[in-house]
Length: 116
Image (tube, rainbow, N blue to C red; front, side):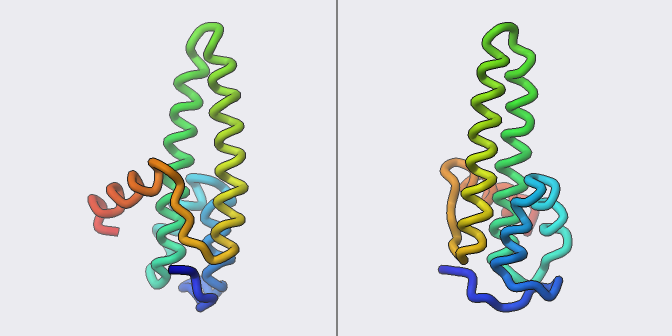
């Protein structure tokens, strides 16, 4: 199922608002989860962005405190985050319900528990 270009609660095209869900990573994902009620497409991307980037942010901080190897691991997490950020925005703008491995399932579980 793909985004169909309809307007959202903010008056934007779905694909543009879904792209914005990734723009500021977990922060924009959270904001759009709180604001957008009409578009399931935007809410899918907002929840996935929120869960994925918050998880990567926390993991990045934790591995950074590991002596010696932590610096390398935190850089790997940073690169993965940058790649996911670009892929998420591109796929959302293209109208795809792109599912990131692990994070999309986690996002669905969190959404179900929060009744979102």
